Image (cartoon, rainbow, N blue to C red; front, top):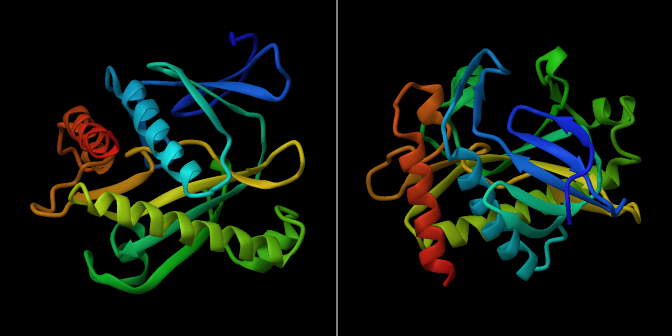
Length: 239
């Protein structure tokens, strides 16, 4: 399957059409952004690492019955996947308080939450991705009804449970992460986008070291080394 026309370019990926209208190709970029684009940089090889990590995790979720857009990894930087209409809700799953949750609500950084918190943000850069409640989602016609929101929450928690269990086997703690969902050609809601340290917070279970994009956000350095370590642990466990 070959790339044809550039359909969309975002912060981390380019999306290309193919000769099959039902399939697209994502090209993973080396670009790094944070703070809604306020911080920008690039790290050679980052895109390939994200593609490989996402591939392994999509395969894991597929094996557990989670419907996703994933088809196959074509090469280091390219992933073939189903076309889907993006639902403009960014789904944030939190197990431990940190980042904006601690800043905005004063919850102690590193505090384990009493239950899995699922939040919704509006995917709109111009508005700064504001928080959404169920009524906002309905007013904006992002979903058809509350039942779809309940399904998205259910799937987010199920994905969280699978990934928490898996990452625990390789001494990584899933702190929080962002998911995106879309509708396939039959109107079914499926998981899309990527599953990489760009949109996950992962802490080493033994040292507490941050193994994700916070290394860029906080100027810690060593981002590529951390991503490589995450991939190597995944591959070691998935063999």
